[in-house]
Amino acid sequence: MFAPGDRKSLRFTVGEQDLAAFETGVVHQFYGTFALGRDVEWTCRQFVLEMKDEDEEGIGTFLNIKHHSPALLGEQVYIEAEVILSESHTLDCSYTVKVGDRLIASGIQGQKILKKEKLERVVASIRP
Image: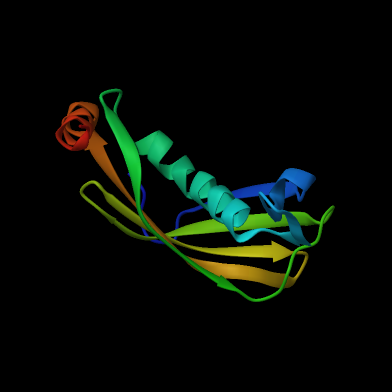
């Protein structure tokens, strides 16, 4: 359905919930790696939502993040994902994260589309 070069994007403002924070408190006023990863996954998932059938679901297979510059609280972030591989039920995307013209992060994210019944079997096989 999708081919290399196809793109999806997401634009939003970095909020308090996106800062690097742990049980000990906020580490810094930057867009946290875990939030960035979540948002990259969501941007790339937009392809899967259009690709999968009702009896299928997408799962992440890998996520690579390379930081280039921090994004600060209140800055508007733009994530653009581009298909680099679409074969059978496998989808890999490269992505960039920017604030204006400033590159915040880049990397690659992978997903696989599986039948829901197969996912249920996997869960059942590892659940005690």
